[in-house]
Length: 244
Image (cartoon, rainbow, N blue to C red; front, side, top):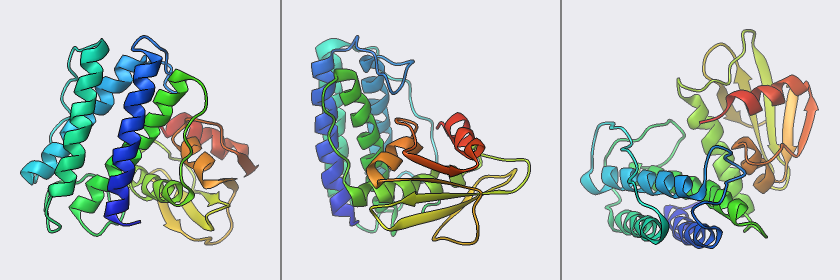
């Protein structure tokens, strides 16, 4: 996908998140994040949006912590979220293609601008699903190609970092397959961070498979894995230890 496509997705998903959160109300429970109410979801996502926009707007070269969320609620919180989302979209749209700034995981992308646009598109899509789950009723679909890209970013980005807890004392091999996207990854598990590579390389002890949109949400622990073959312990390991 091109950076412009990620930006369009970020814009759309952020608007949908706000609409679903407003319809659900700030007290509504978020079933996909059991410790959260909608107000927590909005505070978290809005804070991340502002944090991300800061690196791009300032061409900031070094890491800095995500700040504490504001103590806002109700209509003020919704307005604050919408304003931060709009500013993020505008910041990314106006940023130069040769932007240099800090990024935080190694999934391959052509530039820091592409990194932040892609990352925030996926961040917002997953949390839009959370908001729609809290609202109840039908949820918006995730496009197949975008979902497959998100699986790649999760496996080769987030879980390539030292903080990933998806580890095994003895080497194991897990396969991940998006059946409708003709996309497959081989994930090698050891006592260190997982190493994922595109393609079907050698035998695997277990496979997590399904349509890309369902698998994307499953790997972010929002829904059950559609299909597990082989050793179910590896699927349980992912479910238990892959939280970010």
